[in-house]
Length: 197
Image 1 (spheres, rainbow, N blue to C red):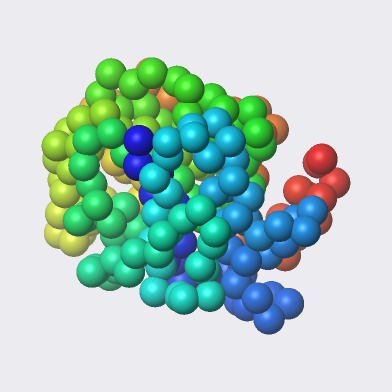
Image 2 (image 1 turned 45 degrees about the vertical axis):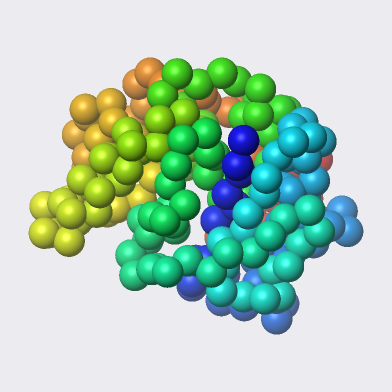
């Protein structure tokens, strides 16, 4: 399977804290990108790991860098030209526990499966690339037309499950994690993670 670690965001909330990108923050001596790459390879020895970024500093052993052709909207982090069958999108600014990556790697998927918490989606495992592309394109178009307020992973999930696109909610085809993944958006998040493990 191909694992795509999305790391081409703007990082505006992080604001270059400690003069380093949040993707390169070290926790227990290892960057977030290296940690995620290593965990993927630990649980899937045949994994192909791609980090999407325009930043050459994100070069990570065990992964290859790919510069997306388009990164206009937040939803474009799901690099359109890489959408295919048998892929998994993960977030480059997320701290994943061993258990979380183990679950993501080993869980069987019929068409698509979303992983996350009540607050955020942290991975999307895709068996049927055309199905993901259909909902990705629908959400992007609705946002461009001003018909929805956001176009991120949540809206793709809500579209896929035929739910209200402006109301964050969880139905089926979603594996909820409790205390095993942490998004990093601010310096306070680093302190929270350090205190949690």
